[in-house]
Every structure is written in C-alpha cells, then in structure tokens.
Length: 128
Image (cartoon, rainbow, N blue to C red; front, side, top):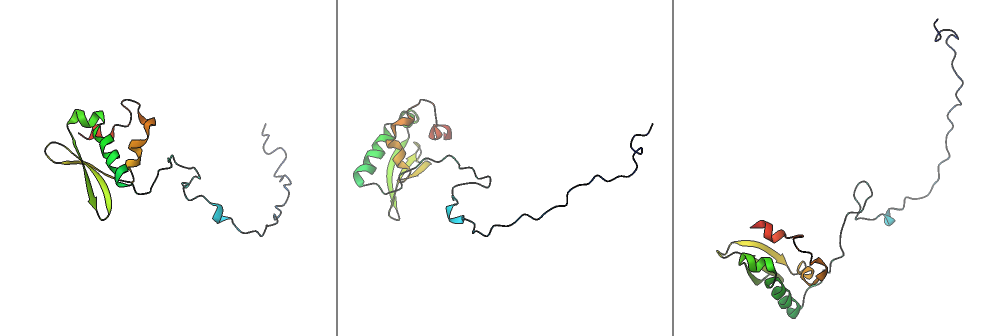
C-alpha cells in the first residue's frame, strides 16, 4: 500500500511569514572591547607595567637576571645596552653570540616572584 499518495498532494497550511518590526537604535561600537578576537573571546594577557625603569631599577633587574640559575648554568653573560633611549638587557653566550635582547619594558617580569616554579617557562634555557 502506498501511504504517500493516499492523501494526494495536499499542502499543509503554514502561516505566512510576517515581518518583524525593526528597532532604530545605534550600534554600540564604542563599548566593544578591542582585545577580543573574532569569536568575541578575550585572550590571556597579564597586565604588564609599561613605564620606563629608573637606572636603579634597571641595574637591580640586570643583577636579578645575572643571578638566575639558568644563566649561571649555561655561563651566559648579561650586559646592559642602550639604543635610541631604550635600555636593553643583552644575554650572550661565551663566544659573544646574542641569545636574547630583552627590552626594559619586559624586564619588569624579573621582579615578579610568583614565577618561581622550577622548570616552567624556561625560554632562555631551551634556546641553547
């Protein structure tokens, strides 16, 4: 028995599409966060200090960097360099090849003691 054709070609009544009223209000683009990606998600970003260091702070950051265990283990040389009024910490190996050039804005992280977890985030150690 053919059930499809039993009733014939009857079209079920669907309600006609009605137009939804539009609301005339401006898009709030000034409230949009610029740090979001295309999906609207915010990426992981720590709030970093971006001001310049005083000469005493920069010297202290260089000393802290020199005292790091991975710098001592690899016998790297840390020196201070100034280019275009920006201070850098230059990390070199024994032959004088540059391992890393760290701007003073990124050196604020050496004062952060929360990153004292061993074997975590050793970017400089993996380079060698």
